[in-house]
Amino acid sequence: MDKHKAIPQGYMTVGEIARKMDVTVRALQHYDREGLLSPSAMSEGGRRLYTDKDIVKLHQILSLKHLGFSLDDIKNRLIPLDTPDEIADVLMEQAVTVKRKIESLSESLRELEVLREEVLQMQSVDFKKYADIIVNLQMKNDFYWLIKHFDDQTLDHIRSHFDKDSGTAFVNTFMQLQNEAIRLQNANIPADSDETQNFAKAYWDMIMDFTGGDMSMLPRLIELGQFQNADHKWKVAQDIANGYVEQALGVYFSRLGIDPFKEETE
Figure 1 (cartoon, rainbow, N blue to C red):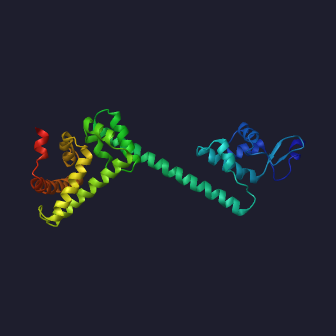
Figure 2 (cartoon, rainbow, N blue to C red):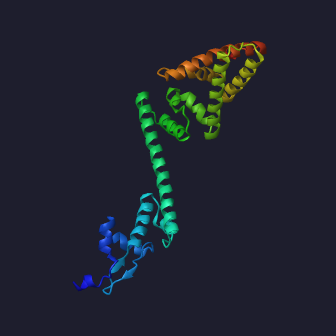
C-alpha cells in the first residue's frame, strides 16, 4: 500500500506503461539506457515513473522501429513534444513514412503476384528469366511479360547490349514506332510516301541499334508480335504494325538496293 501511495497522481510505473503499450519492461529499460525514452520522474522508492506524454513518445519510437529504423536512426529522428505544432509535425512525418512503406509493400506484393503468374505460364524453371522479369517490374516496364517468350540467345544479347536506361529507351522507341506504323496504316499512307520512308529509316535504325549489326537477331526481333499465348490485343496491334512495317521496309530496301534478310540467310 505504501508503495502505491509513493506514486504521484498522473504517473505510471514501468510495468503499467509496458502493459498499456504491449511492450516488455526489459525493452523500456533498454530504451532508457539508449537515451531514447527516459522516465519523467523517479518515485521515492526508486521506481521509474512515466506520463501520458511518454506514451506518445513511446508510440513514436515503436512506429519508427516497426518501419525498420535502427535505434540510432530513431534517436536522430525524435522531435521534442512540447507544443501542438511539434506533435502535429511528428504525426505527419510518421504518417508520410507509413504511407511510403505501404506503397512499397503494395508494389512488392504486386511484383510477387505478377511473377507467380509468369512462372506458371512459363511451365519451366528459369531463374535468369525470373530475375529479368523482376528487374523489369521494378523498372515499371509494362512489357515485362515479353521476357518469357524470348529464347536464351536473345536474352543474353539483350543483357550484354542494354543496361537499365538504354533498355528502357529501346522499349519506348520500339513502342512509339509500332504505334506510328498503326497510325500510318489506318491513315492509308502509301508505303512509298516520304512520310512512310522517313518512318522506315527510323525503324531500321532502331533494328540496327537492337541487333548491333548481328543479322542473326533479325528474325527474333520480327517475331515480337508472333508469340504463342500473347495478349490478344497486343497480337492484333503487332500484326497490323508488322504488316505495314514489312511494306515500308520493302520499299526502303529496294531504293537502297539491298536485301538484309537474304544476306542474313546466306
